Length: 285
Ligand code: C2E
Ligand code: MG
Ligand code: MG
Ligand code: MG
Image (cartoon, rainbow, N blue to C red; front, top):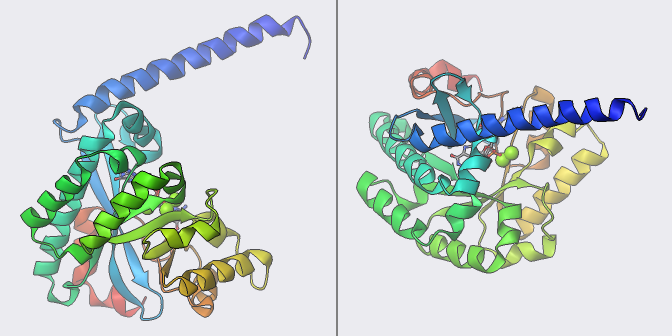
């Protein structure tokens, strides 16, 4: 780059940095008030048994209905919530919402008594001393079965906090809560580490599922992950299934469960209810 352009370039860069710092700060300020102002929503993405073509449960995914900016995706505010510690009350809120909602669906729709609910846990939540107490309180308040609750933890969180994570996971398993390792394959976890943690399910990251082609390397990687999981006594969920071909390959490979736009996007409560009431939808999975 020409020297003359250098200064102007920095000036633009500075401006952009400034603008993004200001908008981040604004978001942080707004985030602090979002709970009391009831701006959070929970969306629910169906999880499907690939072997039986049935609904097994949902993953709870948070959304923020910002008064000016509209729906803000979690990728934009979860990192801020993490850094500020706001993730602890927000995480408690979503756990309670999701458990309560599951109880309602289990009670309202008799065919769905054994549905499960997966909730994502962040690094700070895992290290927060009040987590187990919070979960116990929510389980007893909502009266859902302990084993209807699944928690999702990314493998990078696990590896950043090996000792703490192991202790918390053991305490969760003692309560019969299921543990799901999220975004599996994207982190740096050594496969030989995996058996040290009481993990029930591996969730293969969308990036693998997306790149799978019949008989190619990526399919072989997925196949290897599935066999590894089975050897360790774990089940597999494939995330981000978008096409019929991906679904067919995953079934063939022996993957137990899946979720993705091919089945359904994350849905608002009312949309889930429409699905639960509609036997045709499930008959045609
Ligand atoms: P995640 O836990 O891996 O969630 C799956 C993400 O993949 C969701 O994005 C979901 O909408 C998206 N997805 C599912 N199927 C498909 C598909 O077929 N195609 C494509 N392109 N995307 C698909 P979302 O809802 O934007 O959430 C992003 C991440 O934010 C989550 O990744 C999770 O790490 C985090 N997150 C969401 N809700 C919470 C929460 O309540 N607490 C915490 N701690 N983190 C959350
Ligand atoms: Mg997840
Ligand atoms: Mg995931
Ligand atoms: Mg993911």
